[in-house]
Length: 310
Image (cartoon, rainbow, N blue to C red; front, top):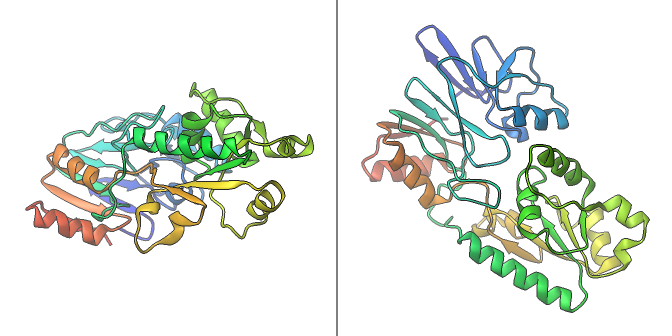
């Protein structure tokens, strides 16, 4: 683990996993979230076509290739285009989810000798409810608010979570989309992801549509003190529902800054991380991101050779 990301040397080959700056060798970008994208690139990147398009939408042009001899990209079920990398009996997960969520299918874990895994939610307190239970709960909340004529804002990360929310709850209407989410939704649709069309927030506001309540809006995670949220509450009486795995945290209130907090995540929960490690059959496990020290210790307590990369 370096300041530039994860670096592997195999023989004379240099492999850089989610590097901040691309160097000589193989440079792999797992997906298009900002914390996994390089700051800039002047070399060829191994990445999925979806990641290239999403990165371009976020202002970074990737000269990408979707294949390279000796390297197999595996869908990790995190966001559109997210991939893990299998090479030389090593599997790097990037960000990963082994749960079906709407159009996103769970990751299939390859067998390997060495596993490099994220552990964003690598503590036992992070056990997420079943998706069907989440859908039922959220639909009940929306239904109760609609009966009172109260509009609802569903909030999640604008790349990934927002599209899952649109897919799961876009049947409520009229459906409005925050401008930053609408352009990403359109890109998802170009990749044949079934997302219902909506009206942009700007258009809805300019046409006076927001005055006709109730309605539903998909918006990015924003603090309650933001001008947008304050306007939505004071002018329209909107209620916010936030979606984040951090809603399960006992100490981090990031996931509980909305009127309702729902523990829907694009990552594995603790039990799923354990199951993934077991399924891989890895003889050596390296943990990165999140609770890497705690999760590595839990694996060692289960007689699995594990080490946190720092």
